[in-house]
Length: 131
Image 1 (cartoon, rainbow, N blue to C red):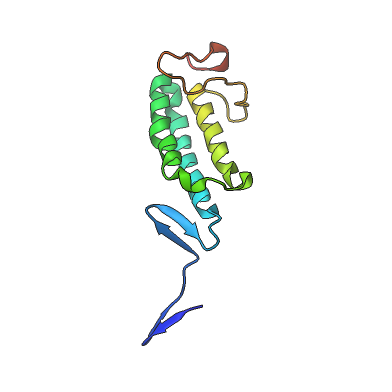
Image 2 (image 1 turned 120 degrees about the horizontal axis):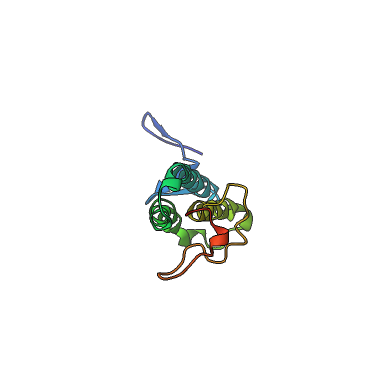
């Protein structure tokens, strides 16, 4: 499908961006989830390289600023999507928990009961590698 006006031909786009959100023709949101997880993993890799020199509070704040804020922005549009579409975002959250707590990339996060504690909360020492 295309529209021709005088000598100009207008072809429809397969993906459009509105307010920073990528929409595809069938509203599957796969492009948005893919780009979002790609960006978050980029920032997590950068944070992981310096996280050993930072204390947990600073690491938590940086992960929150660079990763969780991106996941939180416009997340209401992802409501009702299948789990298979949202799986990359769950992997981002798991990787963010590993960076904050200091676990290795292959360590399971299911044993972490409290990753981002409320003020005054404590993560048990046995689940961390930070001093």
